[in-house]
Length: 250
Image (cartoon, rainbow, N blue to C red; front, side):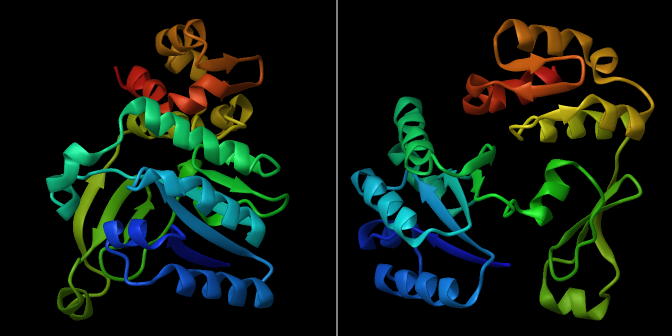
């Protein structure tokens, strides 16, 4: 599977994001990959000025017909060069409008995760491991692993990693309760939500027992649907997914 970090098909937006490629190069890369691979992903970022180019980027994406599209809103993270531009971030209403434009443009895709859409059979099996909060091993500088209830990070610099490739720079042991919490939060990023039988087989208990109060409150707010077999986000819960995580953490 090939994944291309295109982000935008417009020069001004690419310059704002500090990308090293131009729009023409991005288009050529997509066309080349599409001619040789059946399984590929195109990454997009919305919310970067000038935002009026976003619909055209979506139209170009639709024309390319990638099997998988990941689209994320630009965040101005602390400790990055974007922190100094935080006053340029779009407001929540604009963010939602741009997100909904992507949903509409890619309406014939399976919107299986908050920020990920796929044609039938092309969901990201790799990322589904993270969204199911299952185990994975990370190789290379700065890579994370989650094995045996321990989340660990490799050395972040090349020299340190080569000196001790198997050594971990950070290790965090998680309790069973923390793993349960992360599992339900991650599953509720998925349109299909959390299968209660899966949860019980994994933890020997039931989510409606372990998280009774927050699940009841979220259902009352219309952010989740809680049935006999599954807990899944509603359409509003997809849009306000951070609210779901916050409620479960409280």
